[in-house]
Image (cartoon, rainbow, N blue to C red; front, side, top):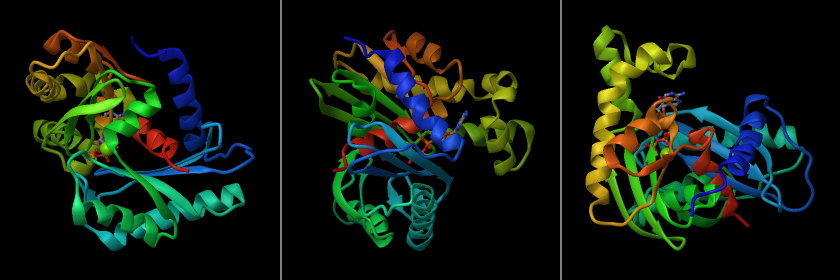
Length: 274
Ligand SMILES: Nc1ncnc2c1ncn2[C@@H]1O[C@H](COP(=O)(O)OP(=O)(O)OP(=O)(O)O)[C@@H](O)[C@H]1O
Ligand SMILES: [Mg+2]
């Protein structure tokens, strides 16, 4: 069975508008907090006891690379700052949080992610893997989550709520930016900015389309013989309008992209706090 896209999208949109408008919603009871330490963005999500979004903030950063903390001090500073801003808006302290790692992250690498959050004075009660977080936010029990982030594309197959298979491919939004930058011979930062500008999509999309087709072909190969009825696209680099069509065409599997794919994993992480 597919998810209730309308209800899910309304939920995600409520979270997105809090971030965009730098606003918090009134709440009562305990808070659930999630910190997503990504390659391109660090996102803080705050929910109330009923899982309704209360606050959120996002910071573009390159302190984590594909699930590895490459700039520990920088990462801590950003999480501290996001926490401080949110606490000021809320008028109450954030004392704990859940966080997540890409599938297959263990030992010291996993601990380093928790250490970042703890160094920002939030007790880490739960650590989960990213696809489990995304699946929770979408209410998905069966299907495949395809997370196209900054550095990698992660494919996770779920069956009855459990992740039964994961695979990772080092192609992500960064590679789209590099392709676009190369095409126009412009610096990476300028290319990334243009790539993310919705008004430029018509010009950008045909240039990055081969990268997305490659991701879709890889997804098909990685799914292999697993039985998958739906693909769910999450992660910032799936924002392009045509993304679901490309995946559907290449894999032959119905492909669903929720609103604000960049915010799905952070929401799902917060759902696991408490
Ligand atoms: N509106 C947009 N259109 C196209 N690409 C976008 C858009 N917004 C963000 N991106 C791209 O999405 C990528 C970041 O996505 P996301 O925040 O999901 O990654 P991350 O979680 O930080 O990285 P990873 O999961 O690889 O560690 C970047 O490459 C960014 O340029
Ligand atoms: Mg991510």
